[in-house]
Amino acid sequence: KAGVTQTPRYLIKTRGQQVTLSCSPISGHRSVSWYQQTPGQGLQFLFEYFSETQRNKGNFPGRFSGRQFSNSRSEMNVSTLELGDSALYLCASSLIGAAGLNYGYTFGSGTRLTVV
Amino acid sequence: AQRVTQPEKLLSVFKGAPVELKCNYSYSGSPELFWYVQYSRQRLQLLLRHISRESIKGFTADLNKGETSFHLKKPFAQEEDSAMYYCAPQGAGANSKLTFGKGITLSVRP
Image 1 (tube, rainbow over the protein chains, first blue to last red):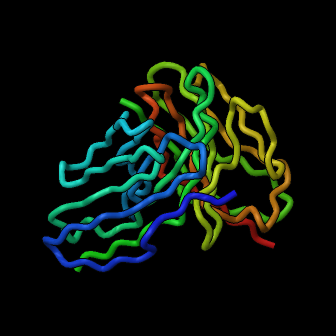
Image 2 (cartoon, rainbow over the protein chains, first blue to last red):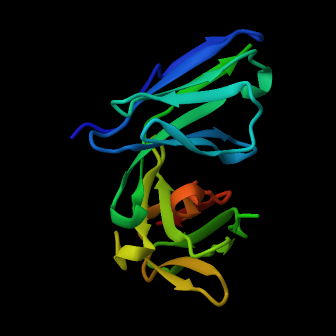
Image 3 (tube, each protein chain N blue to C red):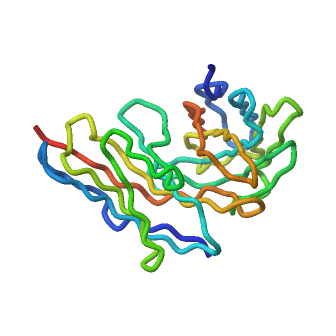
């Protein structure tokens, strides 16, 4: 079956611009999470969506937002880009079983965002 | 606050040596526990989860609730085990975010 697909793979933006990243989860997975990965900070949680609702949010400014559609596809948006937003953005999807049991996340390859 | 500590950044061993990658966590409730691995030039992937009580690629992980530790072990390391390893507890429901440790690089020398 197809894995988690993220588009685009690479992106170069200038400061002040905004950007939208896309994630298609594995079919049947209703939970989608986003992470920012940098060499200095490692993997930092951005937000999680489940059935179109944001269920958890990390400690990022309001410039970072996301949404999930009825087909579980998700997008994240970063407005007013700053140099420090340069990072690899990872999307992960998960199958949530009975009683909320999480079977583990499957990650995409990520979108490499460079802000210049 | 939820916290995951992987005290070492790098572990270098020779092929055939035992490996123990340490993880300590501070988490409210009873989180589910996972180890994730990232091989060079590959995407981050699930290695194993505590609830499955499984052994993947010869790795096992022991949960010690008293010490809140979830160490990853392998009796005989192989060169292909060289990778970055992340410990990650996860809550359930409204507390379901997956929190990653800083990760540890395992280098297995021939």
